[in-house]
Image 1 (cartoon, rainbow, N blue to C red):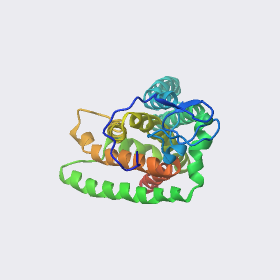
Image 2 (cartoon, helix red, strand yellow):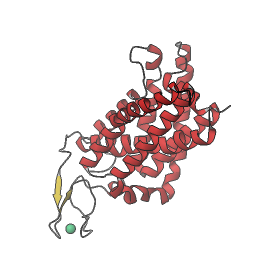
Image 3 (tube, protein in one colour):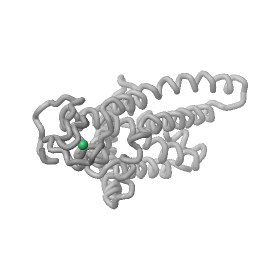
Image 4 (cartoon, protein in one colour):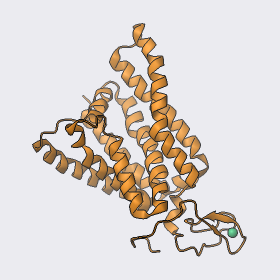
Length: 273
Ligand SMILES: [Zn+2]
């Protein structure tokens, strides 16, 4: 199957192929046998997959951990921090910042741990010059943001809750907000939504992968499903999810991370007072 051809079939996400050289069973999407490096002749094997796919089970765990695990950590951290606020050690804004950063820090360590055996492979793309396409993807995301921002403000949209929360905490401590919101946060989201969700969903079918990655990435950024204002930010996040998935599929984690990092980094800088 060529990379750009639209695949209309649904596949088994756990499908394996057998190496004709050594008999080893491995992921049918991998271009070469991981044991003897023999080239795979499976129709879904693709050289681009060398640095993008992990293992279907790891992909599901990464997605579930980054998507729902984060809520559990946030709940635990909120209870611990609540006591500090009640005893007057932190004010409400500081508590919010500590809470957000603690959760991202814990999630980052856990996700890197889950993906650890694939980290050398996934990070290979950072050393390639194609990673620089991330700049262009960042420009595409920002352009869409500006255009849609203008349209949605005509429709009456004001700032969405996700952006407001970021603005509030990014004003408190610039170096910390760069570290957590621009450097670690995007890595957590890339591991969750590209390495995890997008990878797993496109095992069924490439189009399903793009639709799922885009819609779920947008939904997690909506904080109140009953608010029209929140829904007006949906297209921006859906486009970003689509653009990051494209960058990931075409050039690897390096490019999707660079694009995501730049978008968040600029947002932190613009909001900094
Ligand atoms: Zn082999």
